[in-house]
Image 1 (tube, protein in one colour):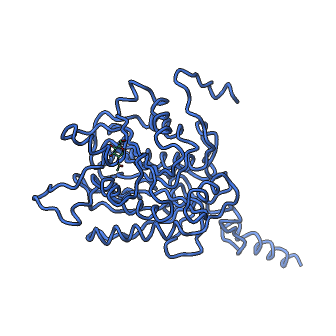
Image 2: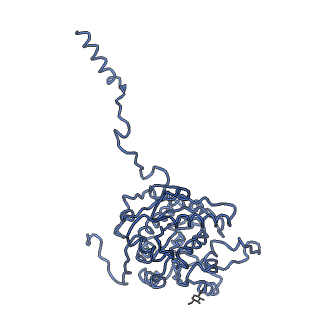
Image 3: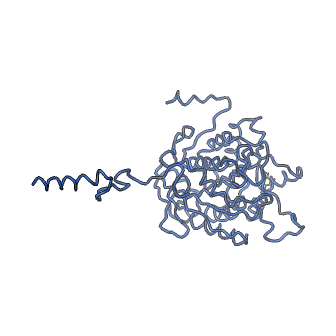
Amino acid sequence: MMKFAYGTLIAVALPFVLGISNGDEPTWTEKYGSQYDLLFSGPLSFSHLPYSKCLEQKESLFDIAILGIPFDTAVTYRPGARFGPQAIRSGSRRQFDFTGYTISWGLSPYDQGIKILDCGDVPVSPSDNALALDQIEVAYSTLLKRPIQAENTRYTEVTKVLAKDGIGHPRIVSLGGDHTIVLPILRSLNKIYGPISVIHFDAHLDTWPPISDYGGTITEQSRVTHGTFFYLAQEEGLISNSSIHAGIRCKLTGLADLQNDREVGFQLITADDIDDHGANEIVRKIRERVGETPVYVSLDIDVIDPGLAPGTGTPEPGGWTTRELKRIIRGLAGLNFVGADVVEVAPAYDNGDITGVAAADLVHDLLSLFVAEGSRPQRSGEQKPLVKDEL
Ligand SMILES: *[C@@H]1O[C@H](CO)[C@@H](O)[C@H](O)[C@H]1NC(C)=O
């Protein structure tokens, strides 16, 4: 009896003494719970959202899609924006849906009863631009036709009222890609909404007529570049004469460029206007210009000063700060948005992800813009109370 008890004791105690599991070792979930993504881990999707290959997965439904368009073969200077979608997603790694609230907006876009999904990238040809543009248009139209999820929100009402078919359509925030991607996007939007206004944040006009650069010959395909796509969009009747640029500061051939720009259908706010008139006046002018029309926001990252966003193909000194741009975007809440993009992010020229992080933050602002209730622009000279005093 004594011997048996001694042996039992050894059998039970020995594994613990030697640190050997007897099969009861806890699994990860028993001990630590879920396998959550850290700020710096997990697969690369925008703000750690679910990632779906929506183009082929019909069951992937959303109210706002994030769509990468890695096309950069129509640039006039430095290429590299094909890596833009990756850089923007990478720049969003410190963003999550559960930390989407910002003091400046007073809301989280992820907390509005609408579904936001990262729909992956359009596989675009890197060697045939005509093919690539068709691929972008087909992809965009495929997603635009997907039924929306949310019901009876201001968000859904707006798209129903604007669309020619009276049906609610999702909105897409595209991650470029060089700016040429906007031509097939406007072709696609035109089928749903007819001609639309564009609010165009950029250092450059992008309304230039096709010219015989690069060897003196113009071909059907050489006409289509990241500097001519708005000219072509006007030729095709895709944009209405109620569009506006903001942040312009590039060098021009002369007044003829500005005359052409007006004929294409744009008013113009220069980068300097922020010093002379302030952000509120810029907001007022944009709102007045586009009014109640369906409006697309196209945001070239080079509107920001290259010191704050160097990772881009055609940098122009003397741009707006990221904070100034964010404030102007906030002032646009309540307009009738049908889509948006952030383009021309080229991470090869970036430093410490500064451009990718800025672009990801601006995508968050665009998501917030889509869901925010209308706001009036602050009157100039009006003091906004400190947030801590309002709380
Ligand atoms: C747009 O309006 C401007 C000025 O009002 C005019 O000069 C221009 O020709 C118009 N363009 C088109 C395409 O209608």
